[in-house]
Structure formats: structure tokens, C-alpha cells
Length: 433
Length: 179
Image (cartoon, rainbow over all chains, first blue to last red; front, side):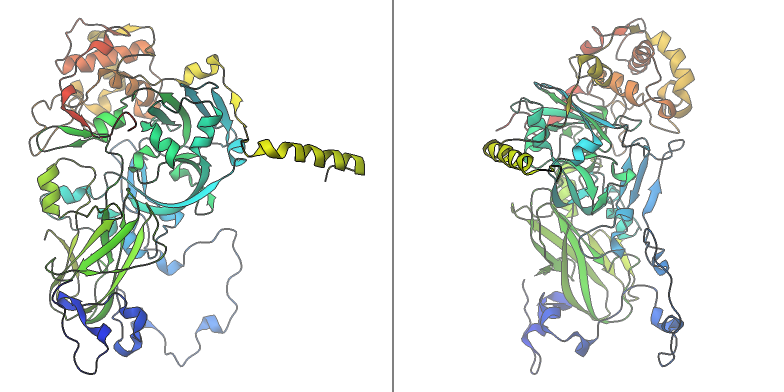
């Protein structure tokens, strides 16, 4: 928000730069006629180049199109928009992760078929009629629920992001990974989740609500399990049954998963089969040896539950290049496990100067928030950054600050400011800057 | 409507009206009671104090046999790793640029080894080991890491008493009690 230039004569005041190297007022696209300037096209494929003569009738205007289908699919021209960097260790097909191609999406919702995956022993094929959920431990009445009975409870719907705590871990490396935005930061998705408030079922079981913990366990072959704070269970936890309007996908926990808004992905136990109210944590493998954050001094942080404030520019980004100097919308996503996003600042000069981006409605707590800002690229090399602030006042750190505080061995909870270098060719590179 | 005459309809309405004051507190209550016999086979989580550890016992020597048959193809000879996770060694590496997180160098509780092996291993056939075999493999891994002696049997009494080398290097940053 420094170095405001003076509007030149004859230009609208909104055309003035709000930060260095061509960033324009966040309301620019709302207030101005975009046609006057012409927005530069993004993306490597120039479809217009192969378009037919526009004066000729295209075949789709001459003949009837295809019929209806029982379950729709994306346009065949979008076949490259798929989950990325699917990796399993040898002999463990189904264990590992796939990533959401966030650079190819817009808005705040992730389509169900592109929601990221992280499995610890593959995706179980669960017959919902055979699935049971047990609530026991420090309760007056241990209860067993079928999926059908869970579906009869009053349901709530909430839009929330889900992020693997190992998201962006390649950014801890000594050199910036030459990967797309989704390959680096795509263990991140956002959906409308619909389910039963967990508190309701705990009360029905007569759970001792002063007991600090409960164990959540999945019905996958690994019996994935995590100890969850009772405070979270009573606050906003739900047993999710629907995702973006349809029943959960198998890879997202069908028929029922635990959902803990803002908490690291693996705690949102999929294929949930058991909740045990307990006085002290079980210290499962995934809360001791796996999802703990090793610091430079050899100590490890345990129970680092919420995902901290973070943002990334998705357009432009590596593989989503600029084609020519001109006016662009720089767009990205911001999120925080601690609440709503309050502000996202964008820099086009590597962090020397910043301007606030526009936040697209709705801006919801613990949900992806789309931000946008106009940028007039002059064709010279430039470094783009985004920096999010959440409603608690937490600000996304620089990479240097994060590594000074936590070292390079933490693996989990990387949330530093991302720098994309735009080169004169319009290509975009991942850089540490 | 399931009522076919006026009297029944009135009765239904009266009954519903009578319910209204208490409805606000009422929840569906659709869970059925679980018996102790039903809960027992599900309740396989083992906390650090060892509560719930089953009967049985196993030594490192017995575990070596189970390991060679069921574990070695993924975790290498004597837990050396490859193609999958290394289970032995790594002590002294946690502050280096390439830390090696193993049962010996990193895991804070021995009970976690029993819990995890029993529920999730072997990868292609989880929950197939007997409790004796799980105790034995746990003992073998602890011995390979220099944590217990070659003759030390692991069972419900001894396992929770094992002191893991990295136990005190975890900082709990979430409050375990409500404010």
C-alpha cells in the first residue's frame, strides 16, 4: 500500500497503480469497462488460433447435440484437468496421495472428482448396509449406529476447506520444486459438507463431556486412528455424509467421515467406524511417529491441529503462463484453520510493495476464499506474491521466517508466502524470493 | 395420512400436541445399545499405560522368525528399510539435514508399535497376526534398536514399561485440558 502513483490526465482514478509494478485497484474490474483495455489471455493453449472462420456456421449449430446422460462428466476438452502427482510407495497401491489441480479451478468449491486424496491403506469398498459406527468409552450408553439411522438425524451443511498437513512440503527443500501450483499446494480442497453434529450423538450416548479426548478410528485396512480433543467434538465437528450435495465419494470416506473444520486433514478420519471417549490420548502411530513436526533442534511438535493462515496465487502460476504484456486478473485462494480470511495482499515486485486484493463473496470461516486483483504486466520479469491475514490477526509468514522458526525437517504445516517469477516469455517459475 | 376416521385423527393431533413441550429437548435417539461382547473386538487401541493389552507374550528371537516371513519383503533385513519405511537405526540423525525417523530414533511409546502392527500390518493382510506374533515382532524391533535385551519378553506388563529414547523430545502444543 505504498508508492501510490498519480493518475495521469484523462485516466479514471481507478486506473492508478496501488502498488509497484502495475498492480491496480482491487475494484478495477468492477468499475471499469474491461473491453477498453482488453484482458490478456492466460494459458498455454491458444484455442482462438484453431477456431473456424466465425462467419461459417459451426456443426454444433447445424445438427442436434448428444442426448442426456445418467451422470455428467466434464467437457472432453477439459480432460487434462485431473488430479496430479499420484504417488504410492512400492507394493502399497492406494496408499499415498493425489492432488487437486488448483491452478485449473476457480471459485471456492472443489469438484468431488478432483478433491485431493490421502490414504493410509487404499480406498475401502464399504457396503453401507454393513457399516456400523460405535460410540463407547466414557459414556453412559454405548451406542451402535447404522448409516441409515445417521441419515435420519437433523443435518447441517457447512462449506470448509480440507488440507493435508503435508501440503506444500516440497517447499521445505533446498531448491524450489519445478512443479505446478497443484502439484505443490494441491493437497487442499473445499467442499460443502453435510452431516450430523457430533455433539448430538455424544449427548445421546451420555458421554462425559468433561473428558478431554476421544479416539476416532476408520474402517480402512490400516484402521487409521487419531485422538481428537473433546472441545473440538463439541464445537463444530460433524459426521459428514454428503459432499457438495451428493453422498461422500469412496475416496473421501463413504459412507461416513469425521469432519473437523480447520484441522489437519488426517484427523478428519474417513470411513469412520468408532469413537471412544477417553481421558488421555491413545498416542497412535499417526499422532506420534507420523504427523508430528520435527524442529531444527531435534524436538518435535505434537498435536499441531489447526492449519495456519495461508494463500497462493493460482493464476498465473507455473504452466498457466501469460501470453503477452497487458492487463490481467491475478487470482488465487486463501484460507485459515483459525477462522475467516480478513485480507489478502498481493505484490508484483517481490514483496517491496503490496496492495489489498478483492475477496470474492462468500468469505466464510475455515473455507477457501477467492481473491482477485488487476495487474497490468509490462512484459518485464516480475515476482508475484500473495500474503493472507486471518480474522485472528495471524499473517502468513515469509519462507525465511518459517524456516528460521521451524527448520527444514518439519515436513508438515508449511504455510509460507509463495513467490512466482513471471519471465519475459510469460512463463512462470517457482522461486524462493 | 395413516388415519382413516375422524376419531383417530383427533387422537393423533392430541398426542402430538401433548408432545410439543418436550420435543425441543428430544433427539432422534436411533442408536442401539452396544453390549460389552460387541465392543470388545472393536476396542483395539492401546494407550501408553498399556490398558487393553491382550494376554500373550513374545521375545525378539520369536519375532525374528515372524519378521522374516511377514515384514522383511517391505522393510528390509533387520528393519533396514526399502522398499518401504526403515524401522531400525537413525539415532542421532534428528538434527541433521536428513533425519531418519524410525521406531528407535523417533517413536515415543512402545505401545504404539503393538497397536499399529496389530491393526495395520502386514500391509497386504492387516489384522492377520496373532497377539503372540505382534508381541514378538514388537520385541524384535525394540531389540534391533537397542532398546531391550535379546531375552526380554514383551507382554501386557513389560511393554508399557519400555522407555523409548526419543520420549522426552515431543512438545505438546495443544492443551490437553480445557481452559
